[in-house]
Image (cartoon, rainbow, N blue to C red; front, side):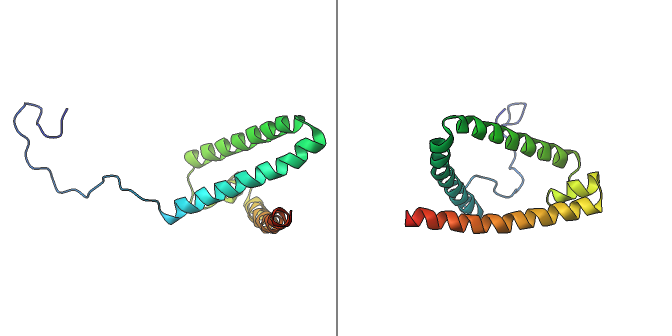
Length: 132
């Protein structure tokens, strides 16, 4: 059915004034940041996998595939938990609801420590790439 004609075929009346919901060109800052982050992760993965493949052989590809599958399953589980019981907060909220307040506290701080260590490791990796 067309937006310009009524169901009976007579001309349509003027539409209500609704906000313009058309698509626009351009990228927002958060999208550019995610694209840059994906590029950095991809480059780091390929630089790091060369050393692993040289040391252990092609079985490293199987290990990467298994860990990728595990990460995908965890993300799907988090998505299911968020859809079943939405909350404003990170995944530590789900641990708090399922196990208790101590679990949410522990998961939240463990994730913070993990991110702090990861930032340091990324700096070391970048320095190794730059220095050769």
